[in-house]
Length: 153
Image 1 (cartoon, rainbow, N blue to C red):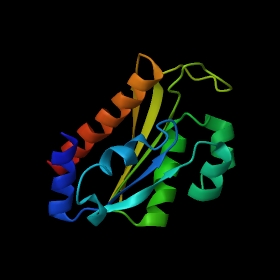
Image 2 (cartoon, rainbow, N blue to C red; image 1 turned 120 degrees about the vertical axis):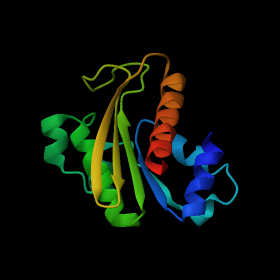
Image 3 (cartoon, helix red, strand yellow; image 1 turned 135 degrees about the vertical axis):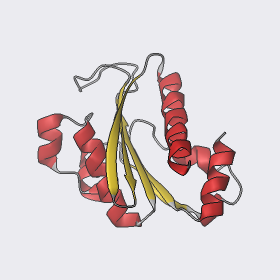
Image 4 (cartoon, rainbow, N blue to C red; image 1 turned 60 degrees about the vertical axis):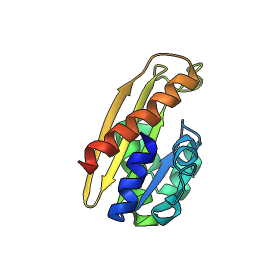
C-alpha cells in the first residue's frame, strides 16, 4: 500500500514532508524504504519536545500552554510551520500520546492529532487509538497513508 501511494506522488510530482512527534520518525522511515522517494520527499522534523516544536516549527508557546501539546491546535501549527520551511505540496504533522504511560501530559494514551497542509488548505484529524505503543505508531502510519490515498483520489 505504501509503495503504491508514494509512486503516485512521484508520478504526479507532489512533494511531501513530515513534522513528527510521538511517531519519532516512523513516517519518514516508512517512505524512505521506497526507491525513488528522493524525488518528492523534502524531509522530516522529529520535534519530540515542546522546545523543538517552538524553536523549529514556530509553534506558539501560548498555544501549547492553552491547549496542551496533544491538541489539534498544535498539530495545525506544526503543519503550518513546516510548510513555511519546506514548501512541500503536502505537509503532515503528528502529535499525541502513544504511551505506554501518560507521563507529564494529561491526555489519554492513544489520543493523536494529525495536521495536514495541502496546497493552501489546512485541516486536522483526531485519532483515539487502543493498544501498545508500537501498535499505536503503526496505526498512525497506516492512517496517514490512508489519508494520502484519499487526497490523491
